[in-house]
Length: 311
Length: 311
Image (cartoon, rainbow over the protein chains, first blue to last red):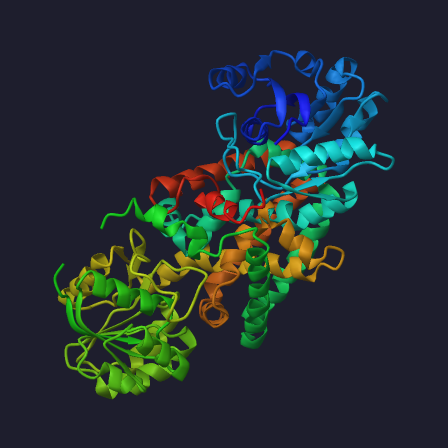
């Protein structure tokens, strides 16, 4: 691999930024990596584990001289950060972000961007339920999609360079407009997270079923939902506040659909249920064929959990 | 391990029965295993891979002389099977089942059981999204819970013997009454499956988002739901038809809860969302501490999927 950027500034040092740091280093994509996090504790950890070449107390210092700035903060923090760094951005630098919503990020960041920088929003569709500067790993982006939403009139060379960085970290890159991104993600990520959070909340509230039963017998399906419901609360609060319209649209469809199935259960319409449950299998197969999940039973986790067995 | 039963008859040869066959053989728990499946194709596969010592065309033949009969058929098929095997059950034999609903199984099976057999319903909370006679493996039950719902007045020695078999296959055993079982499972398994099926159905119906986008970008959370939505359609149809009341109860709670979150999104109540998303993390931690899931990021599947990477 060849160096794509001379100095990459990571603003916010959580799961995505720390994975980018590991990946850029492993694949030799950045000559230098600087970083900033709001929390002194996070900065101390980043320094301790050598996540960046230099860690700064302010975002303004971290972006000085960088030819790529990556905003890795919750969406609600984007506007303030953009305002703070704007005067310190180098001419010709590219500014991108990794937020899960794109329309709101454009609204928050774009007004602050000087004309002499390229602002190209982005979103790696990758993550785990873990967060913080210690949670990153170099292979997080392997065979994952990284969506870029360059605005109309974006400089093709700047887009190509950012794309090269993403591909260098192992990702596949697609481009689309911000509104389409937000609708697609409402379906494939935001609404699934919300219903997972909801189901976990229902289980938590059940008085007749003790928490310990919910936990003990979770292997029946519930535990699959708890993984995404364990994701970072601040990040997800901001996702729902900032992709409100698309999420409410998909939630409306979800509720309609759920009511149809609920009615089929109440009316004991076995044919309807069977036909429905048969169709949904095809989507799972498609995901496995597209290399976006493992075909190993139970996500391949059986053997790992087994290690804790009592037998 | 010592032999617990001399002859175990497996009626129905899908994921659970084939896993039991492998586990009983591996741990030396049954001197002989007989089997029956309705489908000639399944019987041929079972014979080909040596799943049982003997495979029979009828359930009646398979249960003759067995001291344990395990009904591993969809719940809707239980009554007919029970009627068929009843005249052929050996005196003192135990009949159990592995259905995901217990009240309906008791209703379907108990009227047919002669006084000289012990009927002890059961449910291993274990499974994968795969089905059929080739899908079983010996470690499926390791550290999973196996719930028994012995009726009032059940013979303690017969219950202890069945418990010894389950524990011999690596499971932990709990006893409870059938109605409580059905409520607990509505929370930890049935409703989670239904909402997963629903979300996958919504994604499938979206016209503005092509299927290929839903599949490509599924790593944002959606793919977690598709695993359980790929489970056996007949089994799940029967679960919902036979645990209707508990599922409708939990679904009602789920919808209420979802509407509260939906309203918080609409009203932009970030505090409510953040507090909710913080509470649900604790349940995930509990599940991991209880050894019911892996703490590895992304169920530990990252490395497996990575193998298909393009980098």
